Image 1: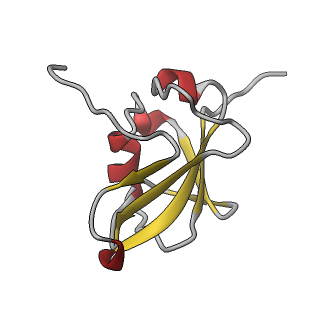
Image 2: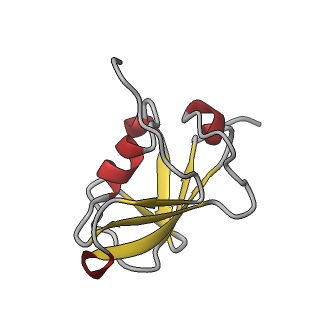
Length: 101
């Protein structure tokens, strides 16, 4: 990829506050390292301000998660798909599915 994105890890602002919602995204199973989010706080997650009507897919792509179609996503404890529209206050969890025994 040519170029890079620099942002404040604790809060990312994309547009005017009147047109935005605030969400929290939490990355599990090493996804914070996969996304290369320096300074990511595993206890607090990442607070983002995104435009109203944003879909989960856009946020996942924005933070740089590779193989996003292979991950599991939960919003407020319920499993969702990437096309899910986000609402103000959503708490998003991203993780790598695992199996074993």
